[in-house]
Image 1 (cartoon, rainbow, N blue to C red):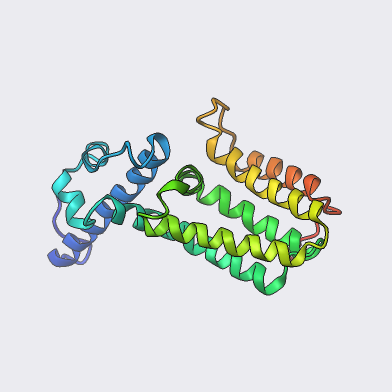
Image 2: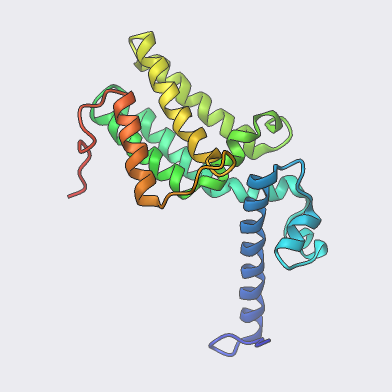
Length: 208
């Protein structure tokens, strides 16, 4: 094993190696938590699949709850930005709602493993801070919907569309649905959400 980096610095090389190991552990943890659940996944299981040791995992993360929090942090940061933007822009039918749909689809596709973990483990919110945070974010989004949806049917339709898209993407593999590539998934999610929410056209949002 080469113990120096390009500049020949041993300390930096060891640091880079540690960071790489930590990132590998996080990715394996996301996969294992999504595949078989947080409760059924042990630190030893994660270590085995990361080709590491339990001691090494615990060197980076004090316990399983800490590992869950760290693994979900990027997804929750993205969701925090989406909710804050929705609170700023509003979610009235039209451009603001279409913009939210685009951002939410990006979130679902980029953080699909984290989404599956969040959707599957609401009952652990009292013991895992990251899951409690996700519940708070969805609560903020729910309150925004109540404030800005004049019609109860409109609120109901919007809630079903968002939660349904989340659950369908998160559980597709478990349900035995063959995975689609991101372009196909984006097209399908966009079509379903725009249709359900009665947005005039999926091309409302322009990037040029």
